[in-house]
Length: 106
Image 1 (tube, helix red, strand yellow):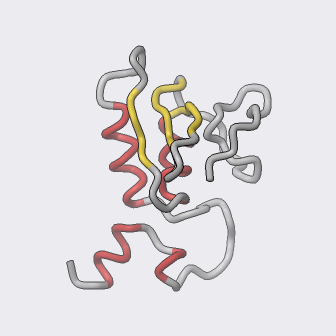
Image 2 (image 1 turned 120 degrees about the vertical axis):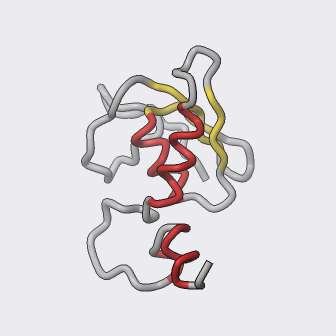
């Protein structure tokens, strides 16, 4: 579920509190969880959030940059869920969607 709490100063709504990375660019898209609750975020954090949530979706903002939602969707495919968490990544739930497809021979 996407938490709609305000982000720390200088960070977009899609930035996870434990993710140490800075925003990249302006708020460009909205990421919504499977129930429809969503937040607006920069492309960088939106991709990380999309990769970490099952059933999430990304939609462009009316005043966002052209192609931002496609870039976020594409980046999320290769981003591991909760990628800022250290440790071994071997299980399907810990790998990116692309890595799981490659493992399955697709």
